[in-house]
Length: 191
Image (cartoon, rainbow, N blue to C red; front, side, top):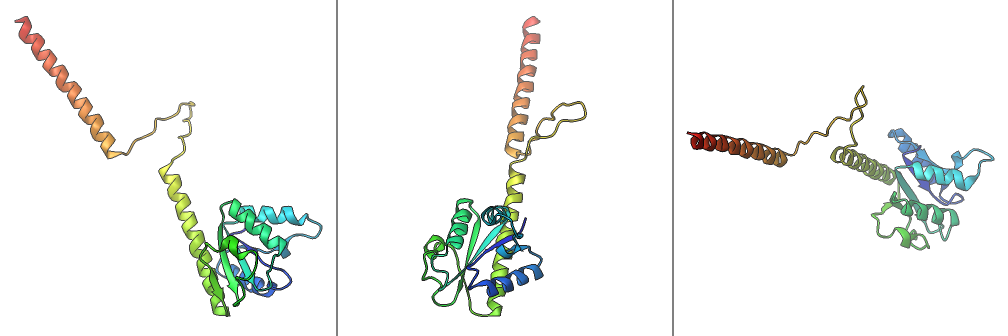
């Protein structure tokens, strides 16, 4: 599993993809490029597997991206899988291709220099961090059922809802008060 899947046109944008991969790895993230696919492996299934296991997808777009079949398929797969797609525009003609309309609704990062690659890495780090925090918060707000104890019994879920606790105590107090009043009335009627 890699943190970041890099989608790019291999014959033109590979130098920038490799620089970006090095920068991501230097910052502690794992990145996948299609050059990592083993010789003889089925390219499309290996690529699809790497894409589905990644946390974010960086799409490098340039004037040369054109209608590259692989980049288009990778972007479509990422969008269908609800991946966080980060468009990176390489040069002034980066929006002049068939792929840009697929990701035009996303915040893009324009790269002109090595320093701009660091902005891409910062954006990816922020994106992955937000995704992890959101996932952890979802797990906290929707806890899974408790595992059974040693005897196979399921423990009841504990409620930490303050309003529910107050309602429960109020109901208990009313029940006790009703029982006391009933007992007093019974004693008074029996005299």
